[in-house]
Length: 441
Image (cartoon, rainbow, N blue to C red; front, side, top):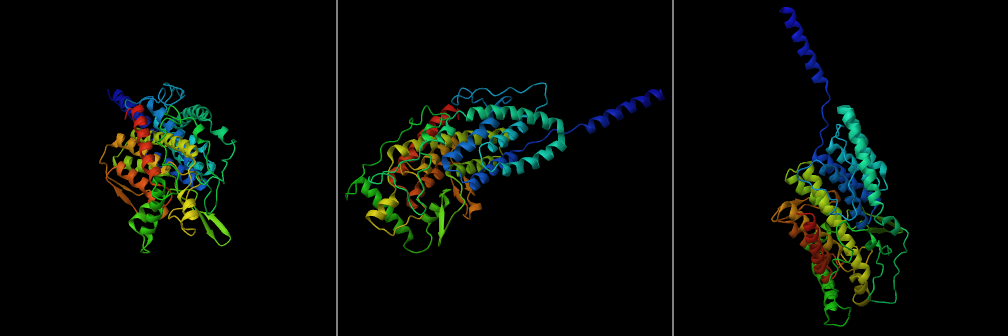
C-alpha cells in the first residue's frame, strides 16, 4: 500500500508540474486596440494625409479586425452582404488554437501599415508587442499571426479594388480663374484642390456617391439683399464681432477646437512650414474611443464602435466630396478679399478644396448618428481629443450636441457660409441614419 501511495503522489506531482509549465493564453485588452488606432492617427498626422484619405486609412483595418471577431461572436454579424463587394474572409482552422482577439489586433496593425507611408513607425509598436507575445505563448502567437496574415491579404485585395490607386493618376482639378463663382486656391500656400476624384472611390455602404446629394446652395449673387450676399456678409460680420475685443472669445475657442485641418501652413519670413493637426474624421474616431472607454467596452464592443463609426465617416467624405467638386463654390475668404476687405483673414486657415458642403458638418452629422445608435442619446462626455495639440477639454451632453458645435465652428472660423453648414449637417445625418439602418444599430 505504501508503494502504491507513493506512485499515486508522484503521478499527481508530475501532472501538477506539467500544468504549471503550460503556457498562458495571450490576453488582448481594449487598450491595445486604442493604442493601435492612436498609432495610426499619429502616423496620419506625420505623413499629412488629406481628410478623405485619412478616412480610408481608418476604415479598412477596422473591417479586418471586425470580420475576424465576428466569426465566433454572438453579437457581431459579418459585414459580408452589407458592405459593397466584401467577400467572406478565410475561415479560421478549428484544429488550431487561434486567438481571434490577437489575430484581430495583428490584422488591424498590418492592414494599417499597408495604407500609410511611415511603415517603420507602426513596426515599432508591432515589434514591442510581438516580443511580449512570443514570450507568453509562442505557439498561440504564431498560429494567430499566420491566420491574421491570411485575412490581411484578403482585405488587401478588397481595398485594392476600390479605385483609389486609379485616382492617383487622374488629372488635377482645373481652376476657372475667369469665373467669380468658382473655387480659387486660397492663401497662404494656394494649394491645388485636393482629391477632386474622391467621388470615384467605391463607397462602403452607399449605393453611390450621389445618394445623399444635398439641396443646391443659394444662387450666387453679390447683389445686396440676396440670400447668397446675406450669407457672405454673415461670415464677415461674425468674424469682426468675435474678434473686436482682442481677447479670445468662446466662438474663437470653438473654431480652434474643431479646426482639424492637416494643411495649415505657417509663414515666417521666407520660410513656410506646416503645423500638425488631426483630420475631422480622426477627431470623431477620438470621440469613439472616449465613448468606448467611458462604457468600459470589451474588445468586441470596442472594435464594433471603431468599425461602424469609421464606415460612416468614410462614406460621408465620399458623399461630401462628390458635392464639393460638382458645385465648385468659391470660398468666403476669396470673395471678402475681392469685394469687401482685401486685408481680412479668417480665424481658421481656409482648407484647399471647394466650399459646399462643409466637410466637417457632413462627417460630424454622420458620426453623431452612428455613435448615438451605439451608445444612446444624452451621452455626456468630455472631449479631450485636442489636448495633444494644445487645446483644452470641451464637454458635451450628446453626440448631436458635439456635431452641432462642430458644424457651427466653420462659421466662427470664417471658412464656410451658413448653407454649407446647415445643409452639410443634414446631409451627414441623413447619410448617418442610412448607415445606422444598414448596420442594424
